Amino acid sequence: MEKIFTRTPTLTSSETHFCPGCTHGIAHRILAEAIDELGIADRTIGIPGVGCCVFLYYYIAIDTLEAPHGRAPACATGMKRAQPDKIIFNYQGDGDMAAIGTSEIIHAANRGENITVIFINNSVYGMTGGQMAPTTLLGQQTTTSPYGRNFQTEGYPIKMAEMLATLEGVAYSARVSLHKPKNVMQAKKAIIKAFEMQINQMGFSMVEILSTCNTNWRVSPIEALDVIENEMIPYFPLGVFKERTGKDFL
Amino acid sequence: MTEKKLTKGNIALAEGAIQAGCRFYFGYPITPQNDIPEYLAKNLPRVGGTFIPAESEIASINMVLGVGASGERAMTSSSGPGISLMQEGLSYMAGSEIPGLVVNIMRCGPGLGGISPTQGDYTQAVHGGGHGDYRNIVLAPASVQEMFDLTIRGFELADKYRMVSVILADAMVGQFQEPCRLTPDHPVTMPEKPWALKGRAGRKPQLLKSLYLGPGEQEAHNQDLQKKYREVERNEIMCEESLLNDADLMIVAFGTPSRIAKTAIRMAREKGMKVGLLRPITLYPFPSQQLHEHSERIRKILVVEMNTGQMLYDVKISAHKDADISFYGRPGGGVPFPNEVLDEIVKAMEK
Image (cartoon, rainbow over the protein chains, first blue to last red):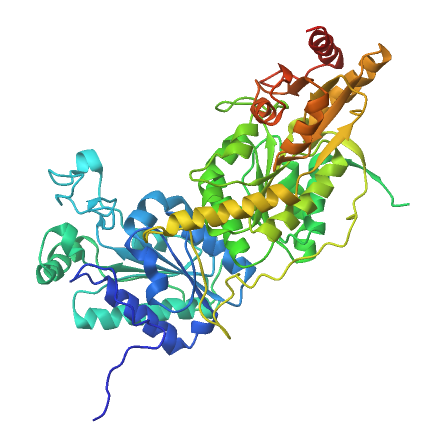
């Protein structure tokens, strides 16, 4: 019988620590597939942040550096400057990148560091138990916004992909989702595009991935996919917000 | 004879870094150390190096972490408030055993404090600062020549033990000028770093991390780190022992106060008082054994610091139990005159 699908070699066979139903595992798979399809696994170094993403090294068989919370873009800056021939990527959650690490991500992007950032937006702090993040939707109940996020007291959800797209150093900024097979395929294409930007030395590339956290959202895995469709995407629209086509630096 | 050149302390340090093979500097401006980044911004590109004016000290130390994980030599420099911001990164580097060099040209605190010479960051540098059970190697230059030599030594020790080396100097040592030999006194070498992250080609994937969640894993990691620290304590202590053979009183001082103490010691000896100096050059590892052995015979000890008594605690736990320890300190930018130290010598001798 013809084998039509198999685990990509750089994805390990380890069972993940992710909650059942979480789409984080899909993000790992398409990332590993992108790395293998580009043939860069031997020269790629991953830098996960702190949170659910930290165990990247158990699941993707490449060299990995564990970064302090929010500081992965600074670590990646040092690593890429020291090894410009390597492919360096960050893998950060929304608590990591959009809260404690805003300074590091903005300045790495603004310097046009030739790195790639995979940004998982699930609108909560997942690993610590579902606290409110800067990406938490208005009205969304979390353990630290028990009455729902109120813009008058907690402000508005932060749109990282759009914000980073305004910076000259950014070559590619896109938002994708994992809630439908079609979207998963588009997400993988976006990751490949982001890596290609780095391979072609075009500058900073970032893919924001809308991902489910059914455990902390207190919904079933199926319902969580609907939350992305009906609640997240209306506020966090999918699309490419910046794509550099040539080395059109100022 | 090797030629010497009139050089400022901070410049000697920066040139020492280049001669040590450091090709990466990341930093954020703060007085009184700005001549270090300014020198390196000009001179690193000339040797193919990288200088990044980082957005914060937090970013600086994490850029150092990224280069260190790549197996190359990197440094940052700052002063009080900036060093405080780096403590998170220093703790992670200790946990992940990533080498690097951090320079603290101390300014007064707490808070924004002042920019005059001080030694108020001894405790932060030597006994922690960041979270968790860890140590940094701490080197305390007292001359422009040592700013050069100890920077090179700092890089070598950092690589040898996969630790962070801290150069802890007061603004006086950073700012004054002295004749300095600007070539290394030994061939600078860089060890092999098979642990560095360079991509998995030709080997299994590697990992640098500080997270240990499995039962007993973190404790085992802590014990491994402690074994390494004991080795550092056995092998790497440096101190200057001056005029101690016949001394009745031993001054313990590092950095600028050690030089003021030397003048005071000369004045005291002219008056017939037998005073000597123990100057720790490594603050971690602290010369506890040397201090203890001298204090078995020299029971009077005078600790002189430009703070309110921070190294004093290390002297107290190192000295013989019967040692009579006096302290003289000037915090907040106060620099003692030799005659002030002489007065304290007289008081300690008469006790």
